[in-house]
Length: 264
Ligand code: ZN
Image 1 (spheres, rainbow, N blue to C red):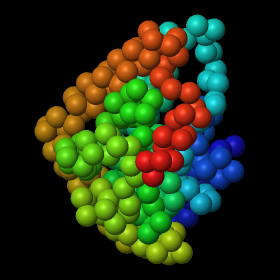
Image 2: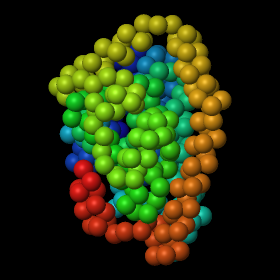
Image 3: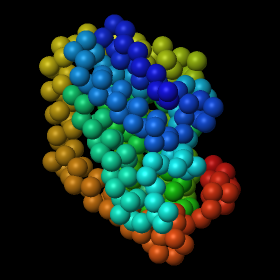
C-alpha cells in the first residue's frame, strides 16, 4: 500500500506513503492514487480533497527503477506512449477535473513527475523548504509529460527552468502564482487543514461551479489542446532516444543524477 486515504469532517486526505523512497511514483502507487481520487470524487460526504506526502519530500517523481507490468523485451514507442497516456496524462487530467476543490501540500523536493501530482490540484500550499524542478531535459526530453509549465510559471520562467533544470524555491513559486502561499514547514499540515475547513463550509454546488468557471476559462484559452499537443512533443523525445540508444531516455541514471545535483 503506497497511499493512505482518510476522511474526516468533509475533508478527504490522500497521503503519498512511500517516504523511504521520497514518494517516488511506481506504477502501483499511481494506480492506488487514482483510486483514492475516484473515491473522494464519488463520496458525497467529501467536500474538499487534500493531497500530501509523508516524510521529508513531497515526491521525487517517477521511479525510474520501476519495471511496469507488461513491459516488452524490446521497448517500443507504442508501448511507452500507451503507458504514459494513461498514467501521466489521463490520470492528471482526471484529478484536475474532479468537481470538488483540492489542495496540495508540498514540502521538500517536488521533482518532474511530482509536478504531475500537485499541478492538477486547485490550490497549492508550499512549505518554506519546498523546491520544484523538472530536470528531464538532461534526459533528452523537453519536459515532463503533463505540460503545466507555461501555464503555471509563464513562458520565460518555464523556459528557464526547463533549459537549466534548476529548482525554483517556494518563495519564487509564490511570486509567479504557482503556489497560493508559503508557510513554515512545521505548520504545513495545520495551515492546509485550516484552509480546507474554510472551503468545506461553502455550498458544494457553488464550489463546483467556481472551479468549472476557472478551468473552463483555461480550456477556452487552449489549456486542454496544448496539454494534448505537448504530450505528443514529449513522445517525440522518447522516440528520438529510442532510435539513438534503444532506450526511451538518453542518459544513464548516474549521469542524470550528477546533472540534477549540479543544477540544484
Ligand atoms: Zn515520458
